[in-house]
Image (tube, rainbow, N blue to C red):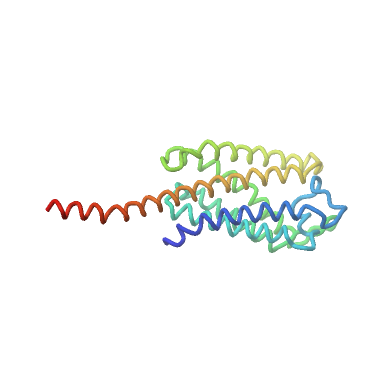
Amino acid sequence: MTAVKRLSPWIACASILFSVVAVVAGQFGPDPYLDPMNITVSEYAVSDRGGVTEVAMAVLGIGSLALLLGLRSAGAPVKGAPQWLLAVWSGALVVAAVVPTTPIGHDLDLAAQIHRYVSIAAFVSLPAAGALLVPRLASDASWKPVARVVEWVALAGGFGLLAITYVAMPGERVMIGLVERLLLGAEVALLAVLAGWLVRLTWQRSAARTAMAANFPTYHRFIASRS
């Protein structure tokens, strides 16, 4: 359990950073006809023969699971619905990376339908988890400093969900790629805030334990000298 507390925040931060860099790098030059503003990340991924986007999605899902484990180990107020929603987000990302959608212009097969539904689950679950976490973080002394930021990014994710729902249905997919990427940006920002603060808390607690252990022999010798 100590190893989980120590390593999971760093694994989460590293996976988020890697995923962001990989997705951004994957947007450049796989095929000149692909327009990131008008096709979804999933459609872009299935057309990207290098597979960078799928790897980034899988790594982000695994890193999100590490974040969840780290939050639980650190005693963060995530028990109940928030932890299950974070687990849904993590699992859905991994499934979406493994089960691709169909190429642009093709009819949806069974795999593509699975991909669609797990993608919807991922998009919905993380902003919902953030919204549920806000009052819990605000009432926890260790997490209160980031409660407002979590509220902002969760709210941005909620607006993003409304926007992509409109664009995907009555909006006839106009600029759906841009809207989806903005939504993903808000969701990744939520993960980054939680992971970054978890790293800070873990480091502070580790430093406090180290200082206490270093001071104990001095205190013990002082007591012995007074006896």
